Amino acid sequence: MIDRSVISFYRKVVQCLYAAFCIMVGWQFYNFYLWASGTGASYVPRPAAVEAFLPISALMSLKRFLFTGKWDAIHPAGLTFFIAVLSGALLFRRGFCGYVCPVGLLSDAAERAGRAARVSVKLPRCLHYPLLSVKYVLLGFFAYIILVKMDIASIESFLQSPYNITVDARMLLFFLSPSGITLVVMVGLLAASFVIKHFWCTYCCPYGALLGIVAMFSPLYVHRDEQECRHCKRCQEVCPAGISVWDMEKVRVPECIGCLECVASCPEDRCLRINAAGMDRAMPLWLIPAGVVTVLMGAWLVALWTGHWHTIIPDQAFQVFYRRFLPN
Ligand code: SF4
Ligand code: SF4
Image 1 (cartoon, helix red, strand yellow):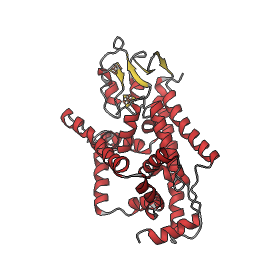
Image 2: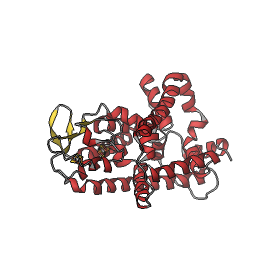
Image 3: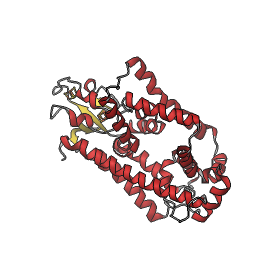
Image 4: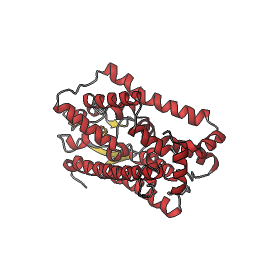
């Protein structure tokens, strides 16, 4: 059993390790892009893990897989990662958001900086609740287009298209050479994250919205013992999503990212714990982070072992696609 006081430390360690991994993958992909687009001299292999950043393409592949049994051969790692993250949410709540996603780490840092600069504000309930719906509207938009409007033939044709084959580089260019509107939106979101705690994760992220819906079926949840609670509201203060834990017996709301910061900061030893549905006893606190990381690593190993990780497109063919189909 890990001690409550070290949860935050271990959470930071896991977040930093994954952020370092993302930076490594991003750097390798950037150098691959330079080589493939003809602007860099030396060849570096394309890292398959870059496909983890293509959830829209992965959602289409998932629909095709469910209807036809065909595993995506263009971005197979993207589909593997997407299914692993959804499975992780089903079993271990949104532990992916709480422990793995680097945007969560950035949001934590922005929040801390905002508090130090005394610019952070708490949204009134009349704004908080309507704003919570923004991420569901964005998710609903993507779900409607992909799951309702697009039939399997159109998904098939999109997945084979030069646009989808070059979508990893398009995403890189989106951040490297943002348009005026993109820049304004990115600066606005960054500024909002300094002022409002976890602005992107709580109100805007459609990926988080999807994981929140899946996590509602997870057996794990934070349980509060009313007899032990002092109603000090420390749990709500430290909660990245601002959830009023002190007012609930079972925290099963989709906004809970399973970070366990509330459990770590509660002054009462036996007040907050992790429970599993149907079992009236505390589960080990390492279960959520260890579970999420194990599902991700396990999916990666299985995909590697069964040949469902690397794309069928040779790196030399990416060279042709990037040079022909990417905007100059
Ligand atoms: S921090 Fe613990 S004691 Fe304080 S209100 Fe929250 S659950 Fe109750
Ligand atoms: S309720 Fe607790 S576990 Fe859930 S997001 Fe808030 S602090 Fe994290």
